[in-house]
Image (cartoon, rainbow, N blue to C red):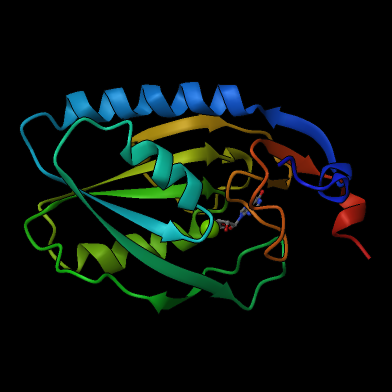
Length: 186
Ligand code: IMP
Ligand code: MG
């Protein structure tokens, strides 16, 4: 079923189509499979935005792997700006000590959320830790973060779909689109 036309009418431009996303996810999966050949990966997905990406990416990786899920929320910011104050709503369910960890993110914007999360995860003594993000919005970066795998660099616009939300809505769109400012202003 296609999403209701209400959801679609709030999108001013399709930035990435379902087909472009699928091709990129396969490519990322191939690269990760080669880079980690002979090792056992732990994918740590950061809910909720990275849920569709995680589900597709894990099936594109040809390695024995485990998954774990974390959920964080930033607080003290606004609905379209993060503050860097991060609360852990759901923690890892298994230790990552001595494991090769790949953090799976939907989007890196200011970098504040991931910066916090990386410090937290490094404290758990993984063997290695790398980052895979579907989207990168470098224009607004406030902290330098080494990104190992990036799907797409996108311009400074608020985007929704393929997991990304505004006010918890739009996550189920199959594409990534730019949200009309009218949908979040006023
Ligand atoms: P950062 O801490 O500024 O890097 O923000 C990271 C989080 O903010 C992401 O995981 C998203 O949940 C949210 N975010 C940042 N930019 C967007 C966007 O354009 N659309 C939807 N969510 C966004
Ligand atoms: Mg997120």
